[in-house]
Length: 426
Ligand code: ATP
Ligand code: MG
Image 1 (tube, rainbow, N blue to C red):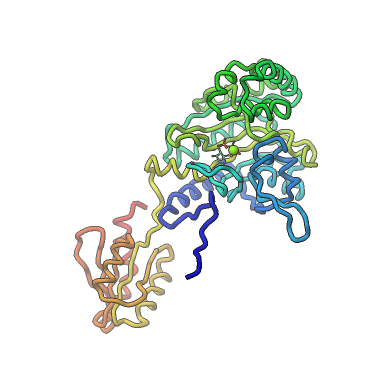
Image 2: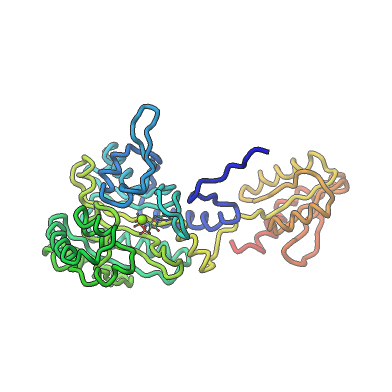
């Protein structure tokens, strides 16, 4: 026997049993995005590597060590996208979507990062991304926090914490960067290897360290808030006031920085205590510098990305109500020949939403009923010689003790709809 090929480490199949979680999230998310007037954009999974070097930042973890890059057959360096914002901006510039417009876009799909796989951290993971272009905020910043809050509420997820912060403008950050650099340089002996590497390249990234030994050093570091100009301070105050007006609870975390270099002013993150170390389920903020950085005319922008696997894990942990994807009806048949398939097609014609699984592969009534039970269907339809001859069908409820009934085939769709209607919650 030849050797089995397995999936790549950190890249997972989503099996049908888990899919109701995904579909519920997708259904609710797409509805909420529409509620807020966001339109879907579909973006390629690969881009030129240079897009991410410029658009994500070549001193970020993502570009320094997590990018899946390779030369294509023409020798050009391409990368699997590690996030969607750079592509959304690239597409926006390329198609003239951003000029004098208030664009609101969303997308979803797989992202790729060469990370150490662990619980809540994959190499292929999935995100929903939401981006708004052309508004300086803070109204749209508030809107996006509200949108994400509503999404979690509509999913039935509770207990998330919202942290917000401001990163100021690049000019304000430059002054702050110098102050941070001076602070950490004076304490060089207490820095871990990652932080030493970040010290000269991007000392703000030290604040993002996940090393608990660094925590007290980081806690005492200067904070950006002391370096904000009047406009940035007012923008941040506007965000805080807006969230209060909407009744959205938050805490200000002055250490909250993003892994991505292009953020300005607002940053926010939804966190959970239920998933262990991988506690960020949704992260976003403002990136007024990115469109210009990628060759477009300066356009204010703000967005967030939601980690689908982590939200799915939370939905599972909190046992939220899910969309039912199981078959509703299982068609059992012995000796009925092609009339079983004909019956199934007729039902699908009349009841377009019906989820009907027709038994295939023969076997006794008994073994077929076992499969019907296992399928999760509420009803078994039974077709044997007798039923074919009398143009009838038997309907057997599987989920409760109601009696089996025989109906004329022409009456079957209405009766099935009636029985399902009385046992489904919608
Ligand atoms: P982390 O600090 O957990 O590495 P990040 O700052 O790199 O997150 P972002 O780039 O902001 O994450 O991505 C947005 C969201 O995508 C995160 O909040 C998280 O939910 C999810 N995410 C990021 N990386 C992964 C991964 N490797 N596996 C699963 N989900 C991820
Ligand atoms: Mg990361």
